Amino acid sequence: MRKLTSLLAAVLLSSSLSVHAYAETETENTVDFGYCDPENGIYTINVQENKALLHDLDNSLTIEEESELINEIINAVQYKNFSVAVVITDDIGSDKSDYGVMDFADVYYEDYCGMDTDGILLLLNNDTKYDWISTSGICIDIFEHYIDHIFDDIWDFVYNGEYANAVSGFCTSVVYYSDSPVYEYDDDDYYNDNYYNDDYYYSDDFDSYDIGGIIEGVFALLIFAGFFIAVGIIIFVAIINSSYKLKKNQGVADYLLKDSMVLTQQTDTYLRTYTTRTRVSSSGSGGSSHRSGGSRSHRSSGGGRHGGGGRRR
Image (cartoon, rainbow, N blue to C red; front, side, top):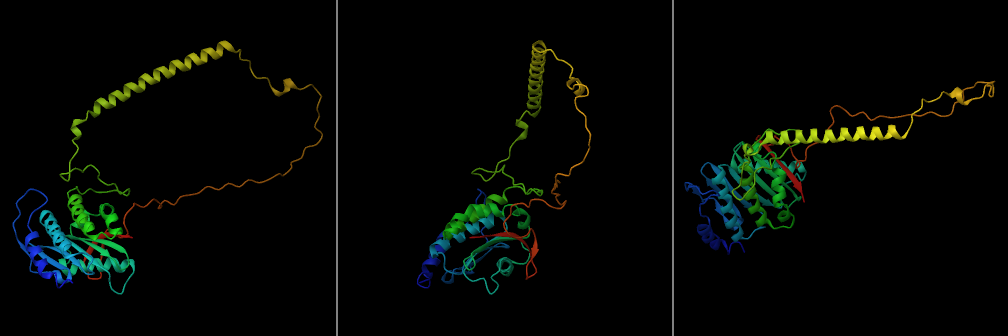
């Protein structure tokens, strides 16, 4: 079937692979379409020094969907100036473990996009249903704290097998989160949420807030409340004093008749023992931050350094 539609694919590619970026900027047309193989769902395209890659290895997409999606991937590469790759497969090789999935994605990126180059790869793994995002170069830091966000954005599509929408959403998320600034995050894994609108980002202008006036208002309110509390206490004490005449407590001897009770024997009787336990927390314990499975940075079996994370369907 794919052979019968390969000619149609060539026409679609020539008409739909137009060069435009997410921002209204002129981009030099240096796209090499010589590595497209629509018959096998293989699109490995050079965009200057980067790669736009779509490998639909198990025919999860139609040719029409592939031609549209590779265009979106090219746009993301041109706009962000790093490689963007998507691989859909139902065979990751002999190692079906989670580590095998991670290594498959990392080595696949290295084979087609280069060792330790800047880029990101989405593996839609229809073999073990454990999907993975691999990052390389500067993208390790850019996307370190956004892997879960990207999965959240596309997860309904992935889970329902709507791979065209998943790939399109991935391209949009890559552009969006790479426009967010990179911060030094603490162990609480703080996510920057101050960047969101249709233009991909905005920045709060903190000078527009009168912080000093707010502090002064709160301080005045506390003084005002403290005054009324003090007046209330004084009135309450005055009422108590006027209603009751306090008398000094008498000792025990005042309530006993002299020589009315004599103790002739003294004994100590053992009744029961109480034992208490106190949990001692280890100084090294603590809650781990929420993150997709994976590590901040690791070496693949091919030797490259990668970041990323995975999620199971």
